[in-house]
Figure 1 (cartoon, one colour):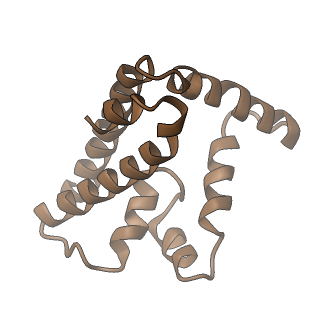
Figure 2 (cartoon, helix red, strand yellow):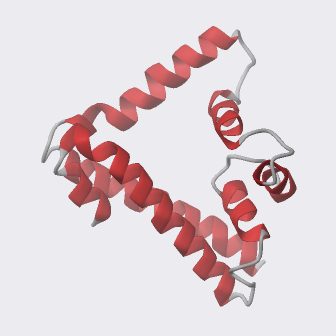
Length: 140
């Protein structure tokens, strides 16, 4: 429902959509952790969330970044998006990242009402995938 509602605003709904989706996903991961008897208020939960979302390879790396001694979260996110496949020039990787990924993800999000079903499906898939990863991570 969050993606569908944000999609009604078209391009104006993208930033609120991303923020609301991040909030929903974080709450879901903390609830999954709590359901497996992990303390939801433990300082490692946010680090585990960053690991489950693929921003950091390990929770320890994420915790270090959150403590201000590791790679900054924005840098890790950007590196994670351009990592993978063959290593090419930074420029080529950035063009592929921006051109391919953003075109697919954002094309329909800028047109009000057309964006609503697109964002609903994309957000639903993202939450479901993260939920499965969280269940495997906390449930064993």
